[in-house]
Length: 76
View 1 (tube, helix red, strand yellow):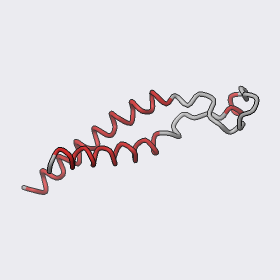
View 2 (cartoon, rainbow, N blue to C red; view 1 turned 45 degrees about the vertical axis):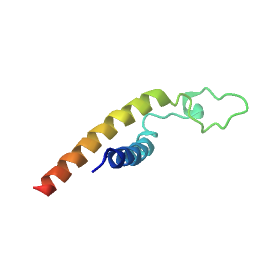
View 3 (spheres, rainbow, N blue to C red; view 1 turned 180 degrees about the vertical axis):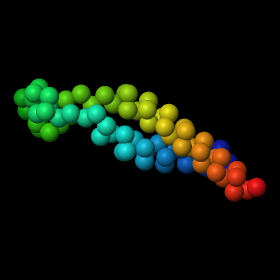
């Protein structure tokens, strides 16, 4: 496979993992008791997006490595 194929595969895996990681540890403003005026009470109080993006990047790299290993085993 070419490098472009691997980058495209990583991109797809990254977005899939991001949507799986986003709900982890989210508390709504209503649950935390910090409802900001003019916002939806169900909105996240502290989304911690940077932490989730970093976790997504690491998990996606691991998944891509597992895919690469699986493809290498299939070619044997």
